[in-house]
Amino acid sequence: MELARPLGDCKSADITDTTSLDILRLLDDDSPIIRRITVMIPYGMLDAALVSDEDLGRIGRAIAKNTNLTTLRLCCAINLNKDSSRHALQFLDMVGKNRHIRHFSLHGGYGFDAIETEAFGHLSSFIKNNENLESFEITHGTTPEVVGFLVDALERRSGHPLKKITLNYSGVKDDDVKEMMSFFMNNPSKAPGRICLDHNDFGDNGCFHISKFVRKSGNIFKEIGLRGNKMGPCGLRCIASALTYHATSLERFSIGENHKIGDPGVIAIAEAFATYPNSIPSHLSIEEINIGPEGMKSLGIALARRSYPIESLHLKFNHIGDYELMSLLECFRSNPALIPKTLDLTANCLGHWGLVVLSDLLRNRCCSLERLNMANTDPVPYDTVSYAVNSVKFNSTLRELNIDTCGLADEKCLDLLSSVVCDTTSIQSTYLSNHTLVKFGNCSSREISLLLAVNSNPNKSLIARHKVIYHHFAKNFRLDLFQDMQPAVLVEVLTYVYRGFACCDKNEKEQKHATKTPGNLHRVDGLLNNSLGVTFLILKNCPVIMYGRKK
Image (cartoon, rainbow, N blue to C red; front, top):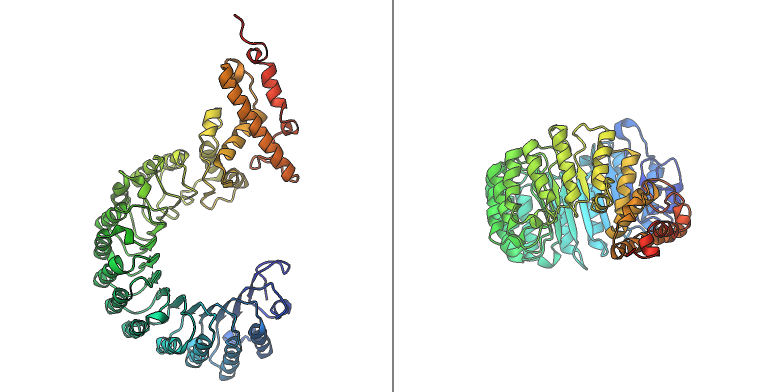
């Protein structure tokens, strides 16, 4: 049994072994600590009984009587032995008696199909009787009756509808989708707001029944997950047409890993959304379907017609090259504020010219991109990577940049980031550096982490002031910079410097134990002990302020 965090302050835990009683004590009804729990039950797997019958029963009874538990995730791997199955079913029956659980998920595994029919009988009773249940998930459930059990439980259920239903890797076919959607059409008040049917076995016919329900029900679905099925362009066009006019509240739409879709499917969905572009879901996932240039261009045209950008666009594993990427980005050249806030291009075939076009968009002050992921792409020359990273210096929105597979050493990454995040060539350059980037790939360098940690403060003016104070007044203080300043300008500069030190003094008092590192700007080489020291030093060496100019 292992805890995700120390016992003193944890709110979630993972049980992977039951040799300790710590979790059982925490699951006591009097404990207010545990809210979410994951129970791994490798029960009798491969003839190695890692969880005894007694321990399994004790865990089930502890879960059943705990009134604080809100999220329960069971990961089962049960062998084909009848006695083992009996104890596992008793465990599920005890768990089902807890009426305080709001989020329940059951992840099947090795041998689980041997008891699925009986197990779903217990779980359907749990769905019917637990009025507080909000989300229900079955993953790796291969029994043909899974949809029938679910529909029966929902039909008998009283109270509010489930907010989310997930049936992933469960062998759901076209007829199963038809049965489920027909039930929702006849009982729209019992339809969930979110439904995920990822990695099943239905195709265009199933898509037709989903679109039929969407057309009739309107804005019920906020999330639809259809990844890894057998749908083609026709089914996708049918769904897109229904979503465009009847599901404008849809937030998430996933169609990745449907290999039959290809370019024609993307063009179909893009053309459907283009008629009413603001109906495009905020989070769009189109992964691993081999999008071509025409599909990318159609998608870009639809997105560029919106009045505001979508939150995320995921295009992983699509063999996207320079031509495909430029076809997409060209649509945003006239209005870069509409580029998605999160753009995921992981594991594609980007080259020099694709990165150059993307970098040019980043240099535009109006660019809305906040997260850019280009991990596991083809290697590109260092000069291209340098050009891409330097473009971030002119961007005020990007928070995360991932190009960590270009083979750069930590020293080169640090050099690149230093010139972007804190350019110390002049005070103005430091002030105009990037103050928003907080994550750069998966770099493990402590120096890089400290460099980016400075930008985590939401007050960007304060970040700029701290960088200027630290790098130009604490480390390399030059009085000659102030000698020839006009009095009015000098007064403004002195005010700026004084406020910077005063702010640092305040932070130092609040964080007395702050360490003295380049990434922590609360202490500045002893000068903060007297915030007026540097101001006096400037005044003393600038006679124009002390005595006025000679006539």
